Length: 123
Image 1: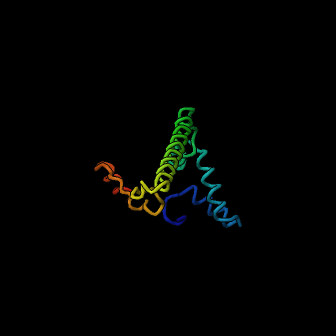
Image 2 (image 1 turned 60 degrees about the vertical axis):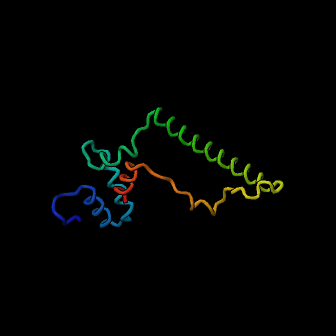
Image 3 (image 1 turned 90 degrees about the vertical axis):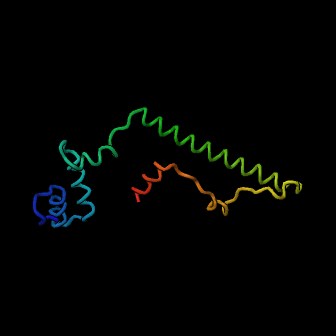
């Protein structure tokens, strides 16, 4: 890549460090970190949304999302436990279908057309 034409500062810096005996992976990471310090770097534009500053609102939204997911999982576990116990009690619910791990592959979510298109684009 170094000989591929126009200068590539990150690749060039990593290449020089490797020639000096540094581990290739460490050299590349160090070169990318150095490039991120440059305000006009493509690496900064690429990685800043991922590694940049998070606002209090972003953090609280993620915490709320995590807590909601845990609450939903706990709610489903309680429902499964209730119906399993009901089916085992006295036989009157003998034909009741209880949730189980083995039946999870039979659950089919119907996605809206817009979402199916987006999923198709990602694949």
